[in-house]
Image 1 (spheres, rainbow, N blue to C red):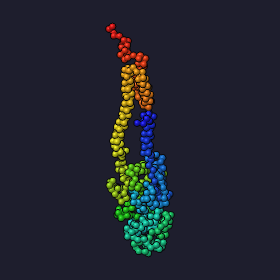
Image 2: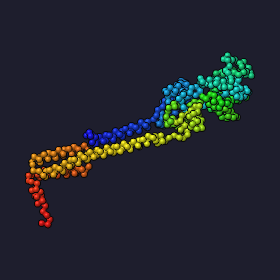
Image 3: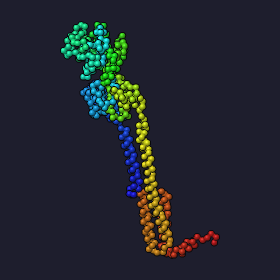
Image 4: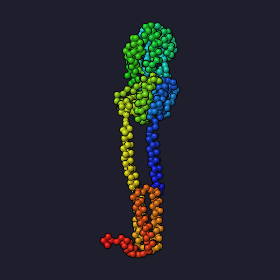
Amino acid sequence: MPAFLHKRESFFLLVALALGAVAGVVLYLSRPTTLRVAVGPRDRVETHLIQAYADALARAREDIRLEVVSYDDVRDSAAALQSGRADLAVVRPDVRLPENGLTLAVLHDEALIVAAPPDSGIQTFSDLAGKRLGLVAHHGADQPLVTSLLAYYALTPAPAGSAPAPADPAGALPAAAGSVAVVPMRASEVAAALAEHRIDAAAVIAAPSSKPAGRVVQAVEAASASHGATIVAIPDGEAIVQRLPELQAVTIAAGTFGGRPKRPDDEVKTVGASYRLMARASLSRDTAASVTQHLFELRSRLAAMVPTANLMKAPDFDSAAEATSARLPIHPGAVDYYEREQQTFLQRYEDWVYLVAFFGGGLGSAVAWLGQRFAREQRARIDAVLDRLLAILIEARATQDPAALEALAVEIDGLVIDVVRHARANDTDARTMSALILAVDAARAAVADCRRDGAPVRERAGRVLSWHPASGA
């Protein structure tokens, strides 16, 4: 065995290296997980919400950190998730749904809100046939969404040239009765367009409680002779979602737009789109559960900076199996959080703990066996020296040859040198050292006596006995 393994310094060095390795592993496992999150479009409420979430995670020193990457459009953020350039993304499914995207949370729903003057005769979406609809669009996908709904109700967009043409007081279009002219406009133009009969109703895709939705409804009321507004229902939401699974069935609660009497006076069924925080399907369940948990736990802090945070909600599902097989599947990690089935540390790493305990016990036994082997080797070496010293003691008492006695003295010196070197390199207990010292002294004394006396063994023995007369003499 190499000599350096017997040194105390080597032992402490190995212990220090082992502790350093353990500390490194603990530090690695405890460092926060950083995820890239794609958000678009820039300067939209979704971007502000995710940035506020990232800042809150950093301030709270949570185990998850977000690196926010902004894009020009929500279509681009979905593409970033699909291509693997992001771990999370804000997605609007009706714009683009990444194939590897699983929902963590619904940031907010946006409903198609259609408002018309009470005297327009428009009560449901199908009543828009032969009418002009002013659309206040905030995203390029808003008009395709309206077009998809028109197709569901067997309505077609009116010829482009008919939309700008003024309608007669009854609101009829010169186009076919099954057509609807969708007129893009700003919210500030709605009241004037209704007053001048350029449109018969106004629509906006927004969260029902948001300011854009309120402004459109107020504009319709301002242009109405009775200062009222009818919120047009789309009662076939569930059936529409079956055909267009990227859309959402939305209910506008009674009194959403305030007023006395409340507006609307009863809940209204409609459809719309949702902005969702999605994760790549390969993201671990534990990480996905942590992202979802922190998002809702920090909601009150986020709402103080971005009020839209109050609109966040869990996706609708009845069971875990239904959640992971839904038309817009939910990440199993998010389901774990919603179902309160997040695993503890021991549950999460139960197999690893078992393997470490199993192999660790075997490794400990192997280390103990090696230690015993090393101790036996040290004891065997010392025992050999002791046996040789005892043999020298006997040989010295039995010889008269000065040359042999000189050789024994030289051998004793060599054994002393070997023992001293061994004691410096290894820990040796006091009892063993006492035995070595006693044996060395006895051997040297025997050699010295024989050199001085030069008498035969029997004479020396008789002389020694004469020094101790019997007690009865």
